[in-house]
Image (cartoon, rainbow, N blue to C red; front, side, top):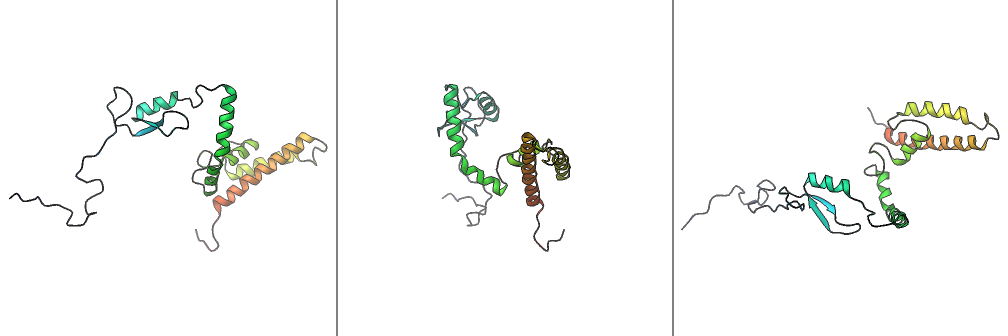
Length: 182
């Protein structure tokens, strides 16, 4: 009678390292004809379809560069679809509140980027530059300096709103609870 070889698990199911099971691991191959690399990058087959292609990273990049979501639609249909999908995607805006996935470049929200543009600043400007630009532009476009000028008044309101957005963002970024020690 043949004796079984000794196992390293000592009767505990999680003693072995994860992924150290004895079964063969399934590997999905790239869906591009003639490619023999693993296909672990999903790509959509068509808009709003759950079906996916699975490509290797090289072919996924090629596919994404050539992908046109609006293929086969005229300009009016493209605009209608974009409006419909933007309307339905409002739930994703909640992620901006938690700072984990909102719009923007990752360090600033879309509103902050628009506010920086309104103050004629670069995307990576610090808060001191924001205050300096705000003071300069506010002095230039203030209604007391240009009385009766509707464009200057509208520009002043834009500058004020932009500063409020950036000031609130800076307060959120630098807020510490009472009694916190650096």
